[in-house]
Image (tube, rainbow, N blue to C red):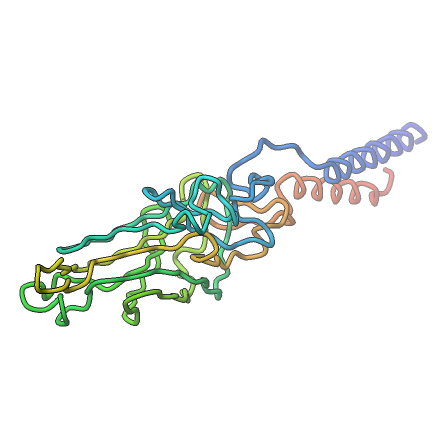
Length: 283
């Protein structure tokens, strides 16, 4: 009888020890290899989106176009005296605009968009020439060859927003961005899904220098995209994306850092088993 009681006490102490050990495993955080699927991967890089800064700006060196989330870029045209815009023009004939501004550097983190949110911002563009079919230089033989300004947003090579702008005019234009979130494009994984902005337009130029007795006539086809804080897109990134432990699973769904994982569930099961063992009466 005494031996049985001692064995029972020994089993009770073992159960208590096992329960305490599993509780410690829950309290001590596990160390994992860093992943591009977490917001923390961005570190302090101001070119990546981060809490308090979700505004993407457009930059150019005069030839190439790119975008990121920093309010400065030493490679871009920043000085007002250094033509802070990307320009394409043609005196006469067809000017076909197709400008892609991909994020540079590429997105190296993951984030989730607000399902009921909207993109905002402003694009500043200066225009000259003709682009409305059936009018001025886009009439006659050119009717059907012109195209209004179109602004599109992409996730890598998949377009999820496109807006045809019909209210622009010669000279400077400030174009507001107001794009609702597409429910099919809520997640962006930096390992393969880079944000891009695209500008498309077809402008006709009909400028003529004139002769001895006549002055110049017509208009040059002109497209100028202004840079930096003049052209921005505000991304409606869900605040949960900036919480510690946020990541996207393999299916592209968001996972929060506070959700118990397998180790936690296993530890809870062990604690429960230990409690049951403590309640058993000695045989």
